[in-house]
Length: 357
Ligand SMILES: [Zn+2]
Image 1 (cartoon, rainbow, N blue to C red):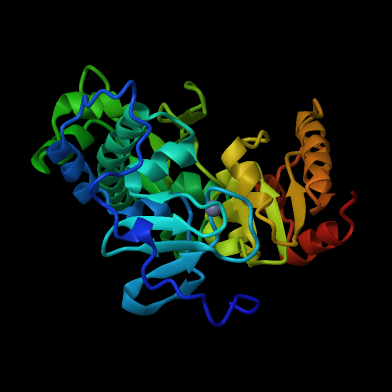
Image 2: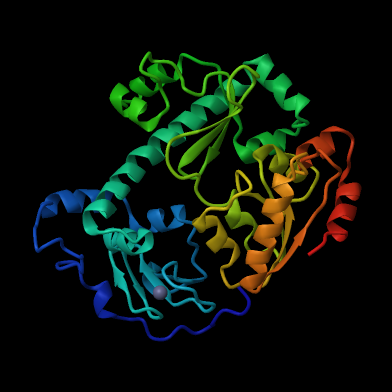
């Protein structure tokens, strides 16, 4: 990327990258409650690079011997000083001076102690693979169920590229458990993940399913049940943040159907916070030190809650030095309904151009 250093300093042999015998864990009272072979297994199952990428980290430079350099996820910086050696699964930051393996990274990144870091990593490992299989299974089901496709059409989602891009699926119900058991997942693990009920049914039954980072969003087709469903746990970062983080102008919406409508209309610099309250991770993503303008396009609800949230967020973003504007939709509209009821890209662009601070 332009602006990054061309010639990295000499990173040939930092001591932390050769160190794997005595990792700098914050051992609790000196107790060695977890045996080293168990730690070794966990670390083999979770390559550091894979875990970093799941936390939205991307390298800015490739160095010799496969090593990578990027912005440090542990402290705020503008020049990459976070060095990763994927072959050893170790990291070291020349900015904040911290380094170690994937467990040490989880401790620092999530600000937890060693045992909690192990628990988080084990949960992440188990959940990541089962969510991937689940999303794939639901994706295959989508076009076999006319009611699901009809619902998408009703919400204005028609483009095959969009459905592919968002990996949209459908939970027709009652069959996920059998599929995942054939792949070797045990029923208690599926219940614990929140995918299958005690009776063995899909908890996302009759919902359109969108895979998220570490979670699934389900939109119910029926008005008889709550419209939104997530798995227990964090909703994760901003939706498809990696694809928009380098855009100088970013449109931020509340819902995935809003995201879909804008993306389909050609606004690919859109991201979604899944609700009008940003979690700490999402806020940190927007305030990553890059100069950008954020066009907050929350719902114009009748009770004003979307606009209040937008105003509050715009203020917080400006305090962090960002340019933040609020896009006003016609009363009662969200970006999805704006397009469904005949709005087009040119009209939306006009609203963006008239956005207010
Ligand atoms: Zn750092």
